Image (cartoon, rainbow, N blue to C red; front, top):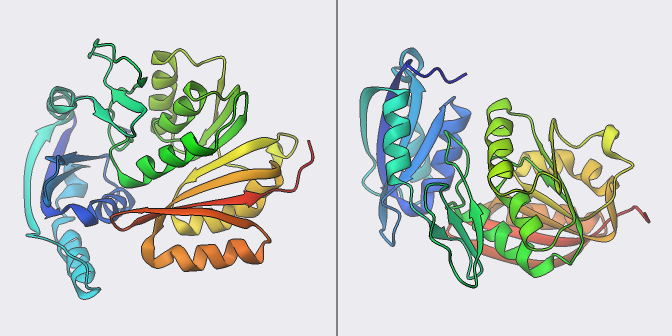
Length: 298
């Protein structure tokens, strides 16, 4: 749990932008309470900042160096790989992060805007997102890829399942793109708290049902036209059969969080499950796969 006046270690890493997603996932798995991407406007090298409780953070520097070394051994462009650290309070991080977060276009149609920006954008679908530690503001490639596919395949009054909703950004976008109902799931209580606030900010409480947990037998009576899963590969494969059970016949599965190296494995898996591969898009080292199938006739 994040405590307002607790001391944190802020670890800043200067890396090639192409590995920012991989490193972010690693840092969250290591227990980071928040990961922030800085200077990401068309620059090859970016600063990634991770926040750890003070005692935990002191032991993470060597783990980060080891991980960067492994990425280098795999032939990935690591960049300068500078690593810095400093102590700070959570409230100081929150203030600086809010001051630094500006609105950003995720697709040609969708614009993400912090709640303190009031400018109205003509012709844009605007989503208000209050940035919190470790939850998405839409700037990572996997979210952008999912958003573009969602735009392409969503239909008016469709029903959408969002597994691992995080900040709720894709669930909110689904409603603004025409969905009549979205079930948004996450297992992280902090993510659920952030998603709840963002759902309120965007006034989509009636359309988005937010639940703690993941897709399981309790959801088998639901039926969905689109299933979103912006997760890592292992979670997608582990949950896929259950996601398929709650999908309508002919539903679209929009799956991301898959690295380019994992793309063929996931596509082979989907093909063996008799799904039709509809599209595959990429951004840096990430892939989004759209497949069509489902078992429910509801």
